[in-house]
Picture 1 (cartoon, rainbow, N blue to C red):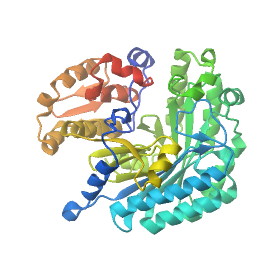
Picture 2 (tube, rainbow, N blue to C red; picture 1 turned 135 degrees about the horizontal axis):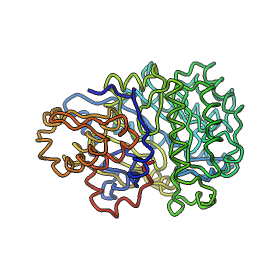
Picture 3 (cartoon, helix red, strand yellow; picture 1 turned 30 degrees about the horizontal axis):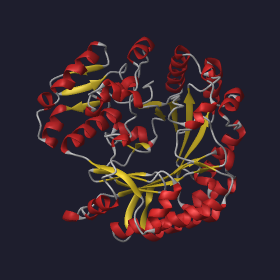
Length: 464
């Protein structure tokens, strides 16, 4: 079918007309659908089923480190703002206890193909604490030699020595938060970060053998202009990252308290925001980057782009991934995992997280067991997000359904999008056009049965 990733077309008029609130689909159903009836006991039940039949999926590990020295006003992550580094020592003790409990459920020395440290700021931990956590991971699990081991970095808070240590500990991919190099924008969001700091970390990562460097940018921030963000993009492209993520700033101050410090009158007008996005797509594709989907770009030789061309790309709570069949075990406060047909999330505050572990209970606050309908819809949304097309026949075979009959309502809605030029529909395929790729969330939302009422859309950010 269509040659994935090669073409993308930005139709500003179409985006403006069809833009609406919707999920980002790092999971389906989305995390706001999780229920407290799914608890530590439910989780243990599903963990016990992993080995049934003698075939167990490989593992992906996610470690959440919530601490940050300073508050970035745009942030929507689960974090704890503190300059008290003794809090990290306590956290590490509980984190390792949770790790041991998870390992006991899984069985000894399970193979881990993928590891990600997120936050917060993972390097809030001291070098000794980073060593301690990685030693515990190696004690409880088996890390394969060519695994995908990544960490998020705040370039303002890390030394060359720490980057060298991360390489020594086994990390081979690094993600740097930049957002915007413009001084005025940085002051407006309380994140002052020089270009030199960012380039210094990239230089250190390359010197220490990191395979992939990713840079995160945000468009739609206060005081941002088309010209200013264009300069940032040129400077970022000059640093030659392997991947770039350009996120839409979602201003939701009623949900995320730090955003109340951002003045709405400083935000770029909707048309300016669209112009910035259009410019970003043109600059990045012009520089040779491939549009992977959902804000992500990569060099053609990067493993994400290769995985997409080969039909192996996957999407999980950390974004796009090359490891499609992994169960995700998530450790730390607020962390979300996926085991078999279930999701689970840890307590979102330190007090409850610590209390559960003190009682020798896994700190699971809520979760979800997916039903048959959830599973087929998850697979469709996953395929659209990663490959921009689906074969109806493959779903008929895998899920024992008649696609057109099962999704009769959805197919009628997709016909509207076909008339808009977002899709090509045939008896066998649903294929997203280059024009539709920027609005892939809209297309996925058609298959989201939880969004059947208009009120449900309000809880999410804008698609673009």
